[in-house]
Length: 305
Ligand SMILES: NC(=O)c1ccc[n+]([C@@H]2O[C@H](COP(=O)([O-])OP(=O)(O)OC[C@H]3O[C@@H](n4cnc5c(N)ncnc54)[C@H](OP(=O)(O)O)[C@@H]3O)[C@@H](O)[C@H]2O)c1
Image 1 (cartoon, rainbow, N blue to C red):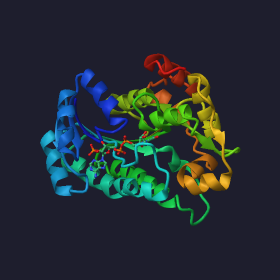
Image 2 (image 1 turned 120 degrees about the vertical axis):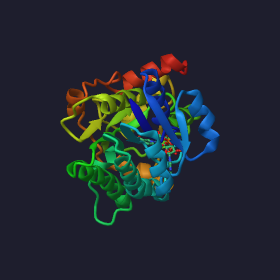
Image 3 (image 1 turned 90 degrees about the vertical axis):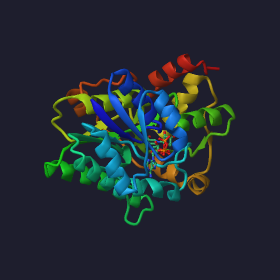
Image 4 (image 1 turned 45 degrees about the vertical axis):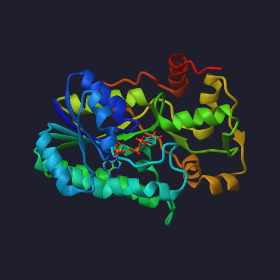
């Protein structure tokens, strides 16, 4: 199959590209950086250097690739994950204007299907005026734009709402392990919000299924493991399995001051329901919970103490 992969150089993009090439697909891999051309080429993809905000160049690149499926994995987040609300603004723009440009280019290029990345915080309900609201609005914009393209018969669209990524090759996991090792990880005593997570390998297999399955009855699927956890439970699990010290306790006001976005995440419920994905994508997470995911991670990477 011919696939146009936007976000090929990202945390999910790289292992997804590897899998698509292994499966024998012809992948055009988009990046903004000519420095990444070589890596993408070595992986077996045809690289194209385009910025999603350059609508004309994007349309040309997609038309030239003649893809059957276009995949949108565009985010612009700090490697360790967002700490402040300003860190979310570039991604908000990608999920509104960027998503629109890519949908237009895919439709003009006569792609049959579009698969796009959303995130668990799309299910969050906030108090009026909350600084996280623009991020929720941007996710809703991305989801609504795809639903509308599908309704209008422009192409099939599938939005995948992923849980929080973790696992080998995920920069925020690398950062977490480093901070746990150094005894620098700290959380408030109470982190009441539960969130859904997904091991990056399982995010890849779900995305492959969403790209390649012939019939998909729904246009939005939650991609998450079976066990939503609070932030303290999640980090406690990582520390326990990897033989590291659990996070220290920090006063809540200080955590909110130092890391307002993670603080908001520790209070909100971001729980996904993977039953539709299991049924329609015939997908089963290899790692049903983080204890299993970190167990394999520790064995594969030899990082257990
Ligand atoms: N569900 C989740 O938990 C989730 C989802 C996404 C990210 N994250 C986390 O966020 C951190 C950073 O994510 P990441 O490594 O995927 O990197 P990222 O910096 O967010 O970039 C992702 C991809 O988007 C592309 N991109 C960004 N802006 C673009 C634009 N204007 N035009 C074209 N392409 C553009 C980048 O292409 P270039 O090659 O041009 O840089 C890159 O391939 C990681 O820790 C990751 O785990 C988590």
